[in-house]
Length: 331
Image 1 (cartoon, rainbow, N blue to C red):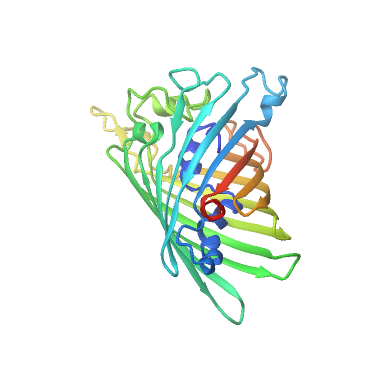
Image 2 (image 1 turned 90 degrees about the vertical axis):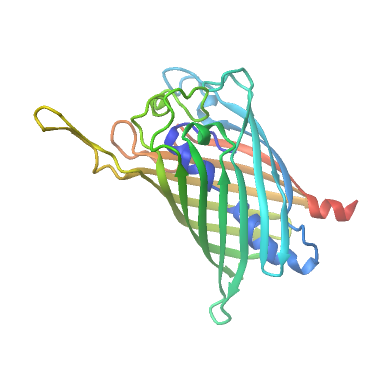
């Protein structure tokens, strides 16, 4: 769960940003659980809550605007071959405080529907480096994607990782994903309203046709995961993101022929994501996770780079995850 506090953060993070623990669930866990023989290994249902850190301090900003929400996520996975896994992911979130962007109080908000196909990978025997890959399709079931006239988004990713003999396992990895987007229009709809991610500082992005949609996004960065026994793991994740917008037209005075405006040099929008997580699995079918994440559109409105690790967008929360395959085996 990530509060989309700005349009740039919403468009980028909603599709790509997964904490390190979540990326293990999508790719590596299937390879490890394949030995169990169950083709549904890795299927989960999660419930969590999240709040921004500025909600805890009324004096943090000129106007106190707390945010607290909860969400339910369904993520079935199916291993249809020894090295290949297919999956779906869909989230419904509801703000428990007064919302700034929904048309009704406590209105449930749906995410895009993500369809994933993952390859569990190949490991080089000498260096013990594993290469894995996946491809994701995003169907525009969210209000934000529909307002941006998005028809479909498709993105391949590659992940390189290595596990070291530290504690119960220290894994270092690097992930890269490109997401290609397809829209009806190069700008959002002019009559859009009730848009998730429309904060006070960037609402104009979805209420006029002058702000360009992103034709594609690139997200890359490192992850680290440390296992402390069979039940506890610590995860860290950092991502750099760049959204590449459609070409912008030059505005020319029809009488004089002079260029009135030229924004063709504007290439895209930059974001960063930093997250930390601590997970505990008291049983095979249950995982509890504490999370802290900072999705940040860069730069700030003053033109200066925002601190990427802690700022006004930082949020904290917890997730309770039921591992459906293990739960079915227990029952």
